[in-house]
Length: 192
Image (cartoon, rainbow, N blue to C red; front, top):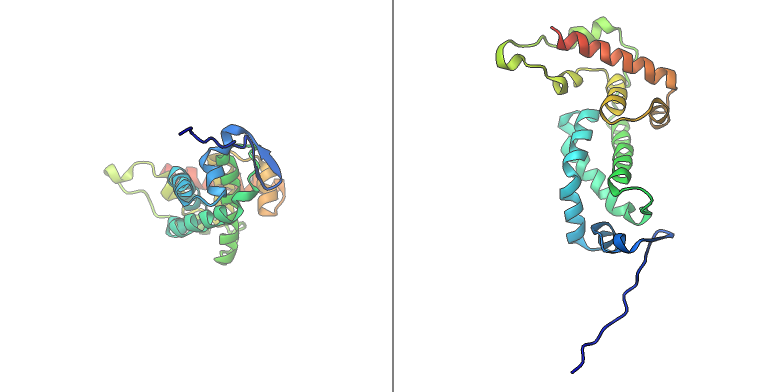
């Protein structure tokens, strides 16, 4: 009995664009076609980065739930991934958008213009000994929301001021002022 072979398509369309043969067999393409195991592999590969981003931008108490929200959105939007950039780049942009929406939904105030003295009063002093080691993550949680968002997007995630301004709906001058403010507050907190 002769083996039966079937022709294999060399391209796959996600959205409106054809993807390369290497992307066709990737977990991204498999997940876009409904493969739950491929999606689970994508989740396992990227969940920690999304969790860190969500924790730094929203606060750690909201990070786990936000990771779930991001990956629900990924599942819904996976067919729009065109393969023009790396999947991780596409996921990162989608995650930032979900985080910004979540921030608005949580009703967090943009406390961009708090008096710096009020902010410093809310920050606890550094403990001594081993606990007194520099804790940037902890210090970031004490920043006003607007300053923290700009700091994370610029200094941690590498966005340019123009991109941050577009994402947050503010001017480039405001992003630069908020970044400066965040750095000054962190410097004071971390050198105590």
